[in-house]
Image 1 (cartoon, one colour):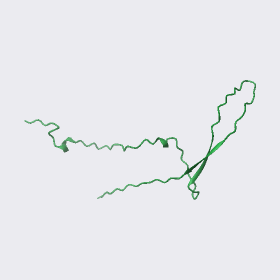
Image 2 (cartoon, rainbow, N blue to C red):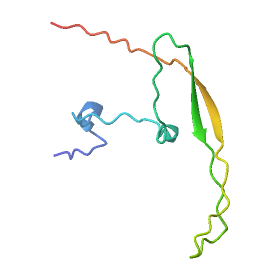
Image 3 (cartoon, rainbow, N blue to C red):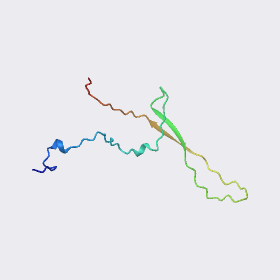
Image 4 (cartoon, rainbow, N blue to C red):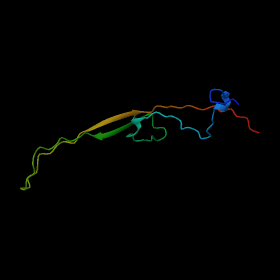
Length: 98
């Protein structure tokens, strides 16, 4: 009697079909991890202006216990303009149903 091995079996018999779908690979988009979403009001244009304060310098003056007020710093700000970019795509699915 002949012995069957995997090399003598036909190709369809050598396959095993797993009915669990694999996950779709997606890129690791790290630039969106620290992003904050903003919304524009209707009919307000395509650019949003945001403002943030600049960092303060470190204070090298020790306060001590005499209650002396250290020299202050001026608070400055920066404007950041962001323009809307539109992205999109669609998927065509062609299925025949009974």
